[in-house]
Image 1 (cartoon, rainbow, N blue to C red):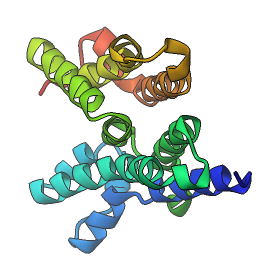
Image 2: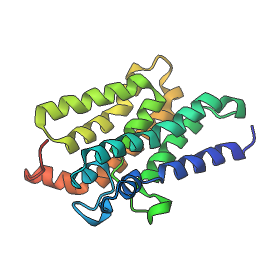
Image 3: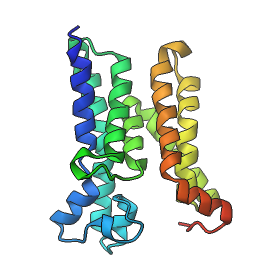
Image 4: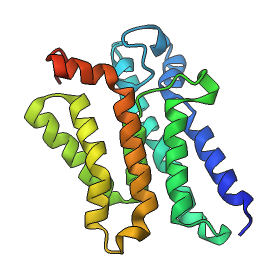
Length: 204
């Protein structure tokens, strides 16, 4: 295996993740830059505050594809270049980091929920589904979307390890990446966490 292949894959994934679709979609649809109103977060939730549900839906889908596409491409074509599960894990993390800190948009990105879900779906369809179901269950029980996202992300590594059919240490790179993403999601949701603790967080 050429040692450059994993590096190229990770850089490409970061650049794909750096496509901040909240900003791109808003520009294409003639809306205000989502970084200039509401929470200032370039994500689907803030785009929704523009009043355009269509723009928010498109942003949500494309943000998820930010994480899904790089992982799926490496899984599908990486073997011929000697790229294994470790590279898949790093590619997923790179795409996620690209969304959080996009090089094309002054490193001011979104909170990463949709992109993280895309990464999980790319790693395993059932894992993405399980995380989605956890999110839905928490939302139905509490009506807090932010809390649901944090819980789903935190449980994803455990779900993956428990449900996997292979030895746990073989899955360590994937689980570690999921744990790092969960930690970064919590970091990006600091204000939401404070509002949750104060009982001031907005409900769905």
